[in-house]
Image 1: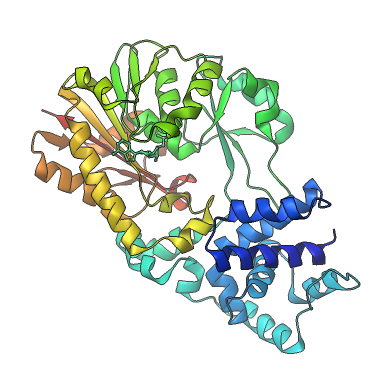
Image 2: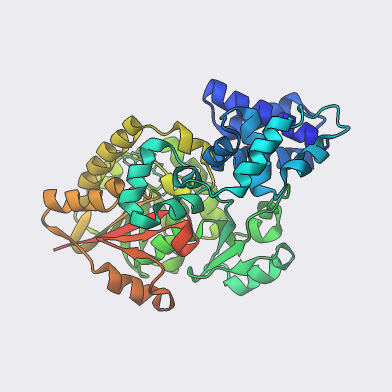
Length: 426
Ligand SMILES: C[S@@+](CC[C@H](N)C(=O)[O-])C[C@H]1O[C@@H](n2cnc3c(N)ncnc32)[C@H](O)[C@@H]1O
């Protein structure tokens, strides 16, 4: 397929996503199934246009004064693929699968818009109702922070200390351009893709099969590090899901002590068994049923609550969720988080730590939630997070935002948006 056909396909997929309010990955998979002739390179390019269009939806709509699939797909190419308006039309010429080229009026309007300064709300590329939430979180930096949440993300890996260190994995993946991450001590980063490229499929190689690394955003690695688990501790991962944090904690504990991996939704834990085996983790025990937790009450050194949240910190990776998110969903997550924190607190031993984590950038889910928890549970008090950050990451003192907890963001730490708050039980 040439660029014209790819753009037409991306417009079709974007129409499907909007029309049926469905996840981008599903719409792309269905398009692929219905167009088997399209090769891997075509699928990657179409996926990139679709994801770019969803990340930069408001910017693209501003360029064209329209929010149609056509405007979004063309906007993506103009904003992210470094094409000029005339360059786009040149790409479409003599391609019978291409959408109609930009008309003279469109060309003139787009050229003018590209020469103007983009207004803040377009630059932020977020739904209007989220702008006040981002302003509350980031103050005057809100538009730059929101714009960073609308950029292509890197591919981050965590070298598994249980199977050798980072240097060996870096050597294995040298051909991918992988580099050590700036902050996380065991992290490896493969830069964001460019143009129609795609990230290497690192999960098909020997190093992955041998459990020498896991795919994990650097922010997720950093919050796991901040939990400060030590070999020999008793740890409950209360919202373990597929086990990303459990595996990081297991490596930090050098396989000594015990991690209980729990999740209210048992099917969510399913991938953990295979992952534990591959990683060589011997100190993770799956605790799926509510009765499994009873003996743990008041006995845990650390209880990690990686709470269900809006995921606003991961908009780079899942930009379709940005536009589907509603205030009602945020309210539902807030109620769940408060309830989960109150329940999980029962497992912390006196002197132990309740580590609260979200992958959201919204204050209400972060400091707001931690503050409300300590008001309901005066036996818990926040640690000094400035000192905690300095202790773990002394060379990166100014990177994280410190409030009641620690906030990470693409603009400040180059990671997904994460929040961490350690609450000590007296
Ligand atoms: C952010 S995800 C966890 C991701 C996981 N920790 C990781 O690092 O891969 C949140 C998890 O919380 C679980 N959850 C939701 N409500 C819960 C509850 N009441 N108790 C325990 N887990 C719950 C969800 O099923 C989901 O798997």
